[in-house]
Length: 485
Image (cartoon, rainbow, N blue to C red):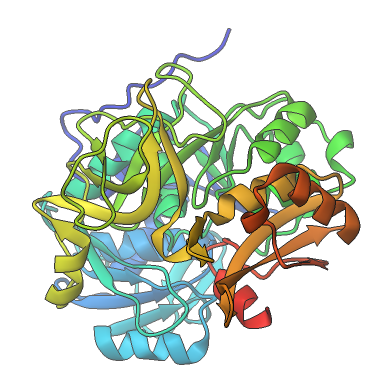
């Protein structure tokens, strides 16, 4: 008999992420907390390691956490919270010069990296500092800062957002509403914990439901599938479509026993309908796609209860509101079916960008977060995202939404991933250039475009690559492809 679903709402005594963790330690100290490189760390062992890290950090200080997904990340993050410090979560895959710019802006009192923290015999401690006299855990107020998140971007210094414990617990609740969970799930956490989706799915949700976190380290499709089979993974914390597309491209997929797998969340970028169809055909499971951003997540989710529709981003979770407004002024609310900019608000949204009033004024208007995404609400209340406003290609005076082109290309046999970008063109203004990863023939790709698109949307060139470049968050790197084009 299947276990019952857990209530997505928090218990009355839970007011912080640390409360979630210590509740799990009290309920199941011997349960596996993480499985990494063949080694298991229990919840009880994790609690002792968290106390050791907390002993070496100062309350009220900003620290930088630059660690890839691993037990070390989780222990260091929770140790910082237990110490009353404020961790800035920095993706370890960022280029060194950009990381240095971020550190210069944050000016942390301490920097934690994987090399500074020793994992041995189930104990984690900062190497050169004493850890045998842990400080008592301070009482954490709901409005205390739980983490600094950085917005995406590959140039300049990313904007910084302070998330309080109340915001993060509230966001975790709404993630749980969108992707219902049972006690003792087994997560495969692929999306980086420094990304808002990866954090909520791999950290927040795992803490809330007492999950075991299977951590693959460097992602490879075959390696991830082997871990899913070996450990009976029930929740695939994949994230962007590129992860699912990579798993679908693995020849070993058909031979793996994935019978334990139950929940297949998707987020980070819109999913082509072809990817939905191929995953369903290969596994019998539905990808429940959601939508969010660093400024507020989740914004909408496809669910079995509220409805799921391939190609849509779902419906808003409780107490979250979504509207579509005109692109020019951002003030006029559009009717269902009309395309415009998506705006949203909810109890888990950011208060603004730290020390950046100018960017805050652009991103927030009258209490709403302006997403910068283009889309529409259909008659049934499903949100359909067309594209990023900045990615719309204007050719010969017409708007071309890259996703339209990508959907047509993704349906061609032999295509794993597709991306369309615009580049300057002296006659058209911008030209549409498409890239695909896979084995498809260029002639077949061009023919599909002429069959499925209006003439002005057909790419002027289609390039087939072995793989498409990805950002540190696992999304296709459009900037890199524009430069290549």
